Figure 1 (tube, helix red, strand yellow):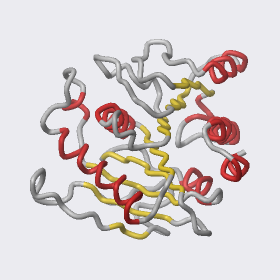
Figure 2 (cartoon, one colour; figure 1 turned 90 degrees about the vertical axis):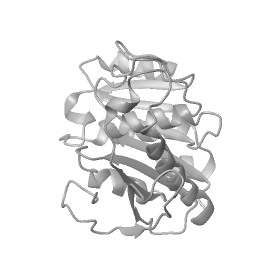
Figure 3 (cartoon, helix red, strand yellow; figure 1 turned 45 degrees about the vertical axis):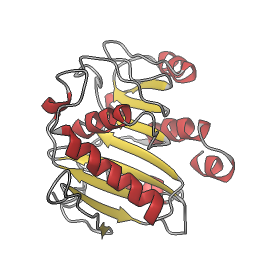
Length: 241
């Protein structure tokens, strides 16, 4: 799987990251990972989970993070959602997907020396990332999980229990005061959505601001930076805000 961005279909500006295969679980790696470095040394990074047929990675999202001192990694997975949505336990075919994400996160922390890992995803990748964080709740592999998905959570037949703070940004037609109220309260459950964990914020923005093809993303980034700033400290928080 090649890295897909919203400007081209080549990993322009990225460098490939080699991950070792695990012969016990799979005979060859099923994840492709790329990295775009921040301009200055950093121990913070974003791991963006991208599944085949997911929307392109927005170039402005990548720039927003790297300009604020986050390295940006993209993990491309070959995965279909049906295997993870059928029962209380992940299907056997999910083992390789979870192992891929384990390897990607371990590489960030052990090889690249990353202390803070923010996992982000859009579309089907959001389902994979959420299921992985649920399955690995005891290890808490991510410091924060950001999901960009409309009506996220209806696909799950059971609630999830994700340990780290979760932000779900989606399109919708709610009034600004409703959005702000839910943002402050950190509501765990959105209308028609499955519970994801104890520290979840559901934030709806107008459709023109929420998705990867949005025309006006200023509020999108303002809300995302404000939420991330609440879970970070010192200089990192100041840079986000």
